[in-house]
Amino acid sequence: MVTVPPFSMLILGIETSCDETGVALYCTERGLLAEALHSQVDLHAVYGGVVPEIASRDHVRMLLPLIQRVMDEAAIEKPDAIAYTAGPGLVGALMVGGGMANGLGLAWDCPVIPVHHMEGHLLAPMLEDEPPAYPFLALLVSGGHSMLIRVRSLGDYRVLGTTLDDAVGEAFDKTAKLLGLGYPGGPALAKLAETGDETAYDFPRPMVNKPTMDFSFSGLKTAVMLEVRKAETEGRLEESRADLAASFQRAAVDTLVAKSIRAARAEGLERIVVAGGVGANKLLRKEIADRFDGEVYYPRLAFCTDNGAMIAVAGALRLADAATAGQIRARARWSLESLGIPGR
Ligand SMILES: Nc1ncnc2c1ncn2[C@@H]1O[C@H](COP(=O)(O)OP(=O)(O)OP(=O)(O)O)[C@@H](O)[C@H]1O
Ligand SMILES: [Mg+2]
Image 1 (cartoon, rainbow, N blue to C red):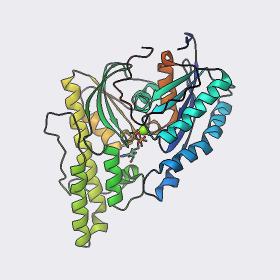
Image 2: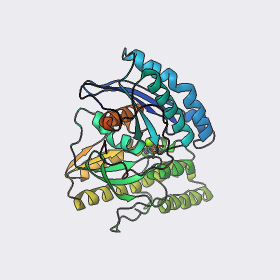
Image 3: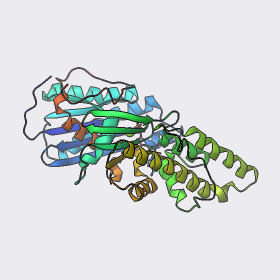
Image 4: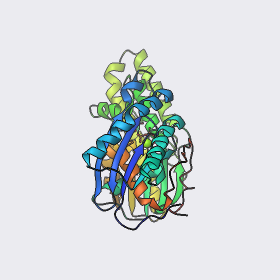
């Protein structure tokens, strides 16, 4: 452990857990100074999903130039600390960010802060002008996770519900694939849904009437698949695609909103934070704001999906966990509840 001085600190954030190379500079006094993002989507699109080895190699190619870019933009020679995503994620990809963070930490003689990727998503709304106060309910919905979390304070997390099968982002991606849309499918499906009739198909709202806070999306995905096959056999798939997309999106959003509101009420929480890639979904943002009688917070759209800014701000809030550079941490799986309060 190193002692962290209680004055303004400049944190370099590095995100490389999956298929986005994200870098940002965050100042504890002045906020976000610069950020840069490189998406690998085009590299993986031909394979229909993320290829881990290609992801790692591309992080190696892009990370240093992006760091140079944000340092130049903010006119900074060296940060006070470096925060990097240490998991959960693809181990090879995490090693690239962790290796760079620790190498630079040794060169610049500054401490490093290993950050939990999902805590980064959860804290992304702290970058906004009006950040949420504690306690709140977090709906974390991304490509790999669907979680309802009771957040009492920084690091005091209890997972109330999680997905039993596919994450909701994965369900969007797989359904998009069924509808002949590219990877990643979530944004494309949401766009197609804008022109469709969401009442055309009555898809199941998975487990919405059960008391559990857990989610399950594979049944919904299968229901869409059966309708896609039927439409194909009947030669009307092309004209049905928008209706299928809209009806799927409505069912998924209804499920997320109903469960989030129920969880917030059960826990007596007056604030909901929606974060993670699916948090960029316009219908989800609108419905939860319309139907919840408390306050709803989201990160700006660009900070819903993976980015370096959320890692930098999470690092700033976890300065008490800063360690001397030299030991790379990379964990494919990592429980959010195990994090605990910073510095303990
Ligand atoms: N507008 C949208 N509507 C629905 N889904 C969306 C939208 N925009 C992005 N997504 C989905 O968000 C996911 C990507 O989010 P994110 O980058 O947070 O996930 P990840 O980093 O791959 O997963 P994790 O954070 O769980 O490791 C994809 O599944 C994508 O389809
Ligand atoms: Mg993510």
